[in-house]
Length: 286
Image 1 (cartoon, rainbow, N blue to C red):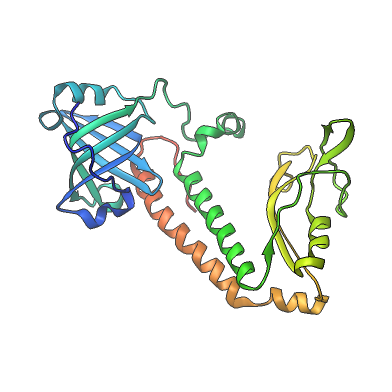
Image 2: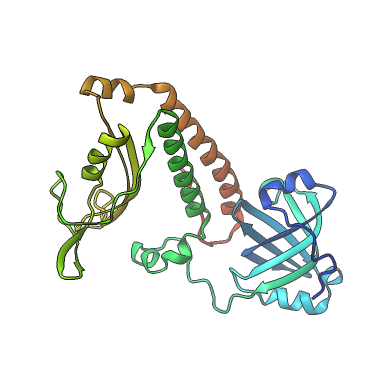
């Protein structure tokens, strides 16, 4: 396997549209593979999307071509070649491979397919996050936490970090996870409420965004043993002032509009992939 211009900077899949007619190098994981006659079609995914790569024996050499034919899903690759438009390909562009380097081959078949049971998903959660659906969910979560933090900071709130190991419950009254803390009795926190209430006497307006734990044995969406909790406290603010703060709709519209933009971009890529992935696990877009 050759790689003549190894020092060249790689591009993300999302930026290939601006390189049509030129050359590009990408790194990613094998998402879908199909062999049609003397051609091998690869769908390569990175954090930004999926691109189709066309592999021909006379372009990459017989040795590399045979290795590519044997690749399993989730193998890590570096691909370099010409970029051209093709409306049939995800994202409307594809790469004609000239150089392929197998960075790390997958040693086992990928176990996830369509119509999985919840038990299978939980057992392979570390693999399920690689799906396009979970890629979108994680991006939305990251963007939401960033937007909320920015809004609070812009309005004079300070972010503080509270302990995760505590000695008492908060007002909610949910069951707590007890942990061994040297020779003392302690619990995983349900809420940072008490610590935030103490912090307002120093900083006036505070918030934290960190895990909370509740010992509730249930697998419904309304009961989670661990979740991330955004909590806000402010001094010198009565109930009416709190309602006025929550009713500032301009900030709400900004948050929703930003998340919709991200979801629309991700869903567009996901739909293209889902149309042709031949039974491989992908996003379910309503």
